[in-house]
Amino acid sequence: MRRELSKIVRDLENAQARLDTLTATLSGDLWARRHDPAQWSPAECVAHLNLTSEAYIPLIRTAIEEARQLPRARSGQYRRDLLGWLFSMMTGPLPSLGRRRLGRVKTTAAFVPAGAHPREEVLAQFKRDQDELIRLVKEADGLALDQVLIRSPFGGKIRYNCYSAFVILPRHQDRHLDQAERVWASPED
Image (tube, rainbow, N blue to C red; front, side):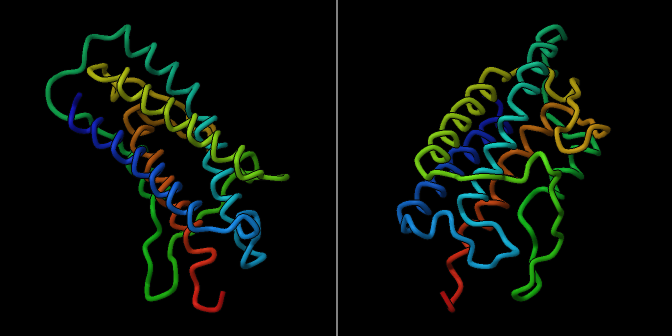
């Protein structure tokens, strides 16, 4: 498998391991509770990631089918296009200045988790989605992923290549797993 895709698989596996560690150390009563009413609970962070994966998976499947119709990928590295690079920077982990997080972006309504988020259901869905994303990355190896565009589920007019989407997903997971880990990690808990 190409090095860039192997890194994406490792990043997806690392996200699963981080979530496993978080849930092993987080008591059940804290899972769905918000520490701050203005911020998501750990359950909401993971439910948001599930909504995101569920929106991306069919787009990626379609892009892979389109890429199968193209000549195989040239040698060299896959490349994100400009919008894919920009979007991956915006949706990735937030930089901080001291204790202040910079670069917050409001998500669109379709990706705001609503309702109850039973722990076992949310975790099982995350695992299924991770397994499917890993399968899709492996299936896409050697295809012209940087030649096929997808429309971002977050912004209907934003289009970037499929390789960019593969980069965006684990970066976005890191961002919200950071958020979920911070919910109950403050000293005044």
